[in-house]
Image (cartoon, rainbow, N blue to C red; front, top):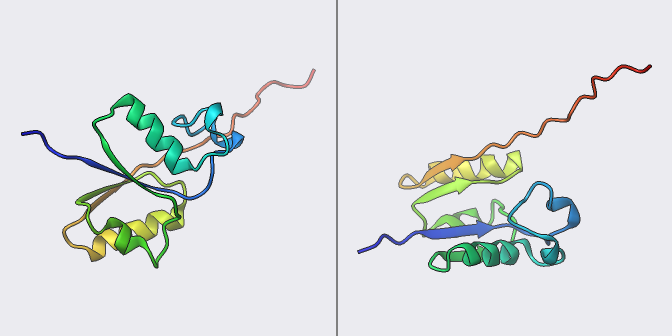
Length: 116
């Protein structure tokens, strides 16, 4: 018997041009679409056997416990420190839930060329 893995994707907003250089799950054809729908479509093309549940909303103190209620493990890929803290706190309140954040760092390139 195979194991069932659910993929939870919670995010608000639409795909914009500025998302394309850092959110590689989206493409130019997705600009204007809801981010959760664009991501779900891309992931389903890669593996149609994955059960993906999308929630087109932002994580907040009023909805976090309902959003994570049926999951055993949360991989936090948010790019917002306040959301990371909220998710971590919610997982601590739910003693059976495990949370692991993903951290991505962006560094600005420094032009080290000297003026002539």
